[in-house]
Image 1: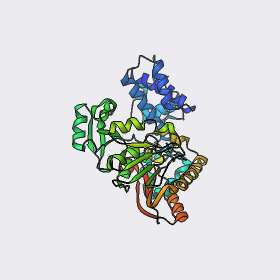
Image 2: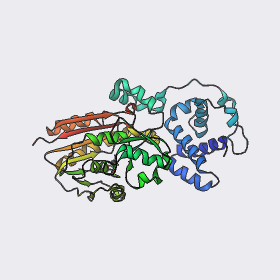
Image 3: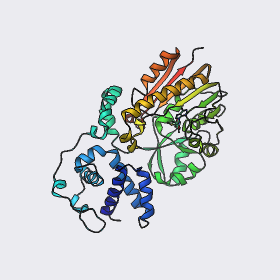
Image 4: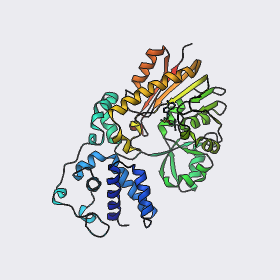
Length: 384
Ligand SMILES: C[S@@+](CC[C@H](N)C(=O)[O-])C[C@H]1O[C@@H](n2cnc3c(N)ncnc32)[C@H](O)[C@@H]1O
């Protein structure tokens, strides 16, 4: 496909995504019905679509409107690509620019790529970091791996990955973190991944897992386990701990047994609503806005509403109230979210401490300015 044909494909896919279909699903359907497109074409089109969703505000401003076409005109302008060479009207290429579209537009500021209603909340939560965070979130997130210390160390994982054409380097956020700088599409088939030496996990999640108070012999529950990312990271840190996974939705945990087997870890599965207990450590990786991860999930950024945010904060409190009852005397609860908003983070901890008289033992708050996803964690210790 020519560069112009790829842009035209992205325009069509974006139009459908903007009407409400999940972008990933539209991309898959498009690939099914356009078999002539090779893997390079599909990857380039996917990149166009995700850049456009991530920078929806500034690109719509630059391209003259919020539509697939407006976003792609904006993208071409922001990257200094000659529009006349793409918007030619030739076969498979987008139609030529209208006189209105051809007018030059001053660059928009990065806040256009952050939901306007949420700007005060980010500014209040992050202070002087808010604007740089918004700029950082215009770009794609790096890809990170976690070295499974039960199976190898960083140096051996880096050379194993290199044998499969993947270039990775250590990242300062966590001793186990590797940033993939080349060959990320080869990870799934690489021997380091298939043999459990590395696992996909953001460096911020790894940094958070590394500060949790876990030791051999402890009983640990990952209460909102989802796909088991935290449980697996904890199992690698403390293979002698008894680690259990629970989620309200059993389906979300279905990959845990295979992931644990690949990692050589043992994770017990609890049925929804039957978490067992008590535990020395209960991890609550709560459902949240996901605002710290919006570089990866740009559609979620535009889908969040004030009502949903309020609902999420209530769900977080309900979960905290249930999970605290599973903590043994003297044990700890680790509350965490991948949110950048104080309403979901600091204010939830304040509320919890006021309710319980527990003490906060440790806190870690990371933003994309630290290099990975935004993440917040607080370790809360039961007094008696
Ligand atoms: C942020 S995700 C967890 C991600 C996971 N810890 C990981 O590292 O891969 C939040 C999870 O909480 C679960 N959840 C939502 N409400 C819950 C509840 N009331 N009790 C337990 N889990 C809940 C969701 O199904 C979802 O899987």
